[in-house]
Image (tube, rainbow, N blue to C red; front, side, top):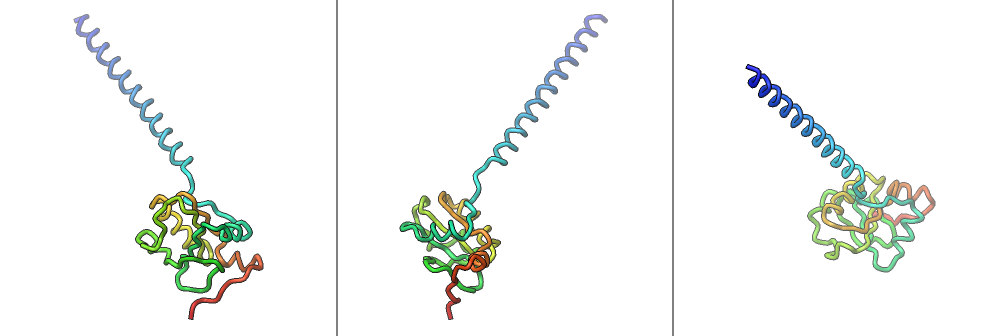
Amino acid sequence: MRKDRRFVLATLAAVLLATAGSACSADTTADTVASSVSTSAPAATLVGPEAFAARVAEADVVTINVHVPDEGSIAGTDLTIAFDQVATSTELPEDRATPLAVYCKSDNMSGDAVKDLAALGYTDVVELEGGFDGWVEAGRPLEPAAA
């Protein structure tokens, strides 16, 4: 009887230790996943009108208006691609390291577009904070919508 009790106690202790080890391991895994999610790089660098203007003026930058419908554009815009078509666009540069400057009217649509650009592998993306509404508020001109 005593050997049976020892066997049961030993088995119970082994189960408890295994369960405790799993719980600690699961917590560590959850913390690691949470840590990696919270430290992931943003899809784009959000910048104000002055920094955006400087970016657009750089020689190799491709500037993209993603606002729908066309309500105007910033001088120097290279492409107009609807925000919801960025992921499937054939107009984007093939080189994923190409510097991009992306904007819309208020920065809502561009926010979606830069997430798609990040998913496509673009690594150097700047987004205009406040969109071209913020651009105009800062006293900068906007080219009229195409007729």
